[in-house]
Length: 268
Image (tube, rainbow, N blue to C red; front, side, top):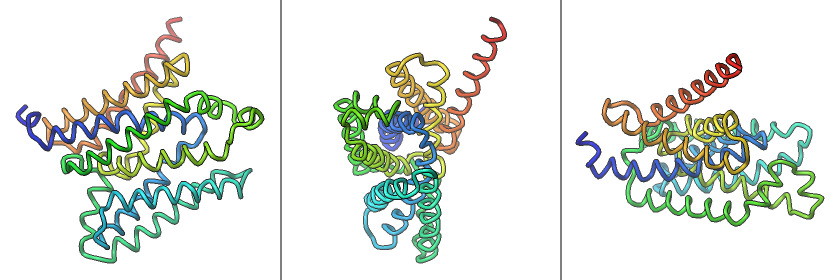
């Protein structure tokens, strides 16, 4: 248990717990709006930005953030162009992100460092990384707290929100940008290939056990925090990959809840 007292582990714990709040929280809104795959899309675009950051000597997370935000605006444009087939916007942007990342990966020897962003490298978080993650967390929590009523209406009935005079386009872009912010800082913690799990699985769990909007909000945060905390402890003690451990714990919780619900139905 000496690892718990190490500075790098304490930084990892702080960063993980911050992301354990924001990623499931944003994922909850995405799942309810049937945009679960936006996490994969933006993470692949962000990793292209990270690769460019390594290539140009710019702070990788900042470059990934710029790419993800740009992609979030592009997705909204494409969603309007393909109203009946809105999911095409995600497929197009994901393909573009993967294509650009594959080119950048092979453009310099330093690209080997990008592996930490693909699979997560929470133990290498710096104080600068923590400040970035903390800033994103503060922005997300403040926006959601201030705009909770509007987000509730938009999430459950976008047409009614538009009729009531709510600027739907603005809020759609806002949600996409907030998601891009969270994904950009989360990829160093759980990795671009796993970040969508932290966005969606806590929301999937809340759909099983929560009975109201507020309960769902609390549930996704609790599940995210518990998974991150337990995952980091298990990974630290048994020398496992932290990102993968967190994701597998989330899946285990989801399977357990599904089994419990099935057992209650059979028992009833």
